[in-house]
Image (cartoon, rainbow, N blue to C red; front, side):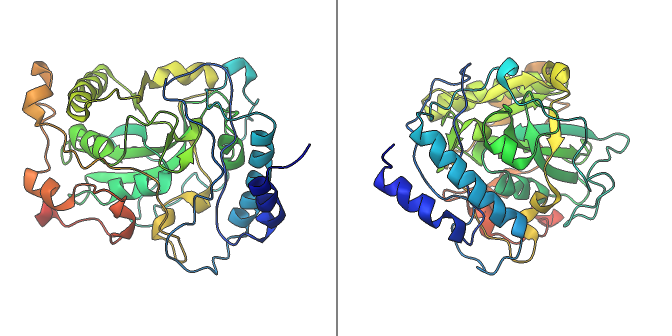
Length: 338
């Protein structure tokens, strides 16, 4: 087979790449979104400024394996970005991700797997999980966000690895798990950040990152979360003026596949706060503020789930075009900014 010139060039240099990068390979079968895109060869995860001496060999090895594998995928006709069928997904494994249980959040210092009494869990996906996680752990007030973690959600293969999720053959999307105290921060505040921090109309991908592993999604654990997600989606869709492709599903839908959520590797957790991290993010905030809560909230939920972050907070700290969150300080914002 004759190689396309650009593909041949990438194959010949993939082993020399110094940054954490990969090209998503295509998956096949059921389509979640109608926004199917033409495959492109690109190098995400490592664009932008940063110290080129990052010594994480696991990331560098992932670059070489995934770039070469995905380029061959494209050359062999892949690239339709449809979600893999459950029966065609990789088998996965029983073993949980190593070195996660009992580990501490790099910024907040909390247990990343614990859900304290009175706390709730939210799981969403809105592009590369590095920037998605950072935006949430910075939200005030102190103690409102107990912990955040990155991982793989809404797929069909138990306990996937990064490489497997990136292949598109597990059905997972890169996600964020948030443990929060609803007495201090509202689910609606987290939900608003989710919508405004990316382009929820972009189908199977976000910015340069293309593939089912970058699809937008929000997964609910109770009926109130479901109502709030769906009502806010309808409002934001009207504001954007085009169809939102975000996947909305119950966490329990994935019980038959082992569960909704699987933790990512330790080196991905709070990645952007770690020494030598590259401020990469492909999210595409649209610069459109979600309409006021009172204008779209279900009547029975208005009092219980009223936002706790003020409009002044959003005017100062809302996600801006260009995925500005990666350049912000790592520490949580002060309570005085609420």
